[in-house]
Image (tube, rainbow, N blue to C red; front, side, top):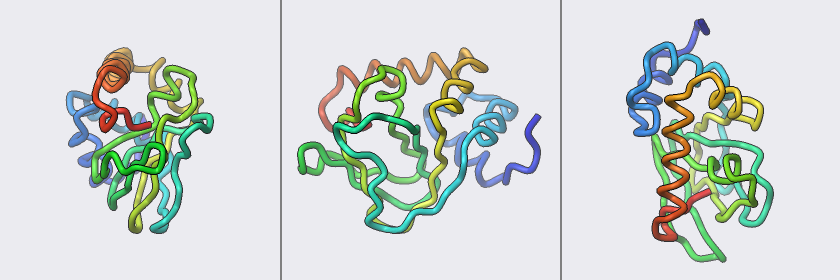
Length: 143
């Protein structure tokens, strides 16, 4: 069991719809896999057309998502992105840029795969999110 995960991180993860039904143990595993980082406003987190190498979960702050230079969504605390490129193995379909200072939990490809392998329930939720985003409006296809 991973210890030393701040309660605020576990609470934030449990508030994310993707992870809301996870046990405390699963939430600790998720937090233990990722790296919490701070990014300045203006930082480009994903670039449309580039390969996907990370999964992102917003702990604080906000970001703007654009496709072909047009804003399609704003993301905030508890929102996640990047899973579509990792699950489907295709380039990013959007550019996501930090609008202000942000705290984000970042999972690398090996960490993301470890998460999927270690928790079938989480893997199913992520696959469901990918499927629903893939068939949703362009604003929902954030990656």
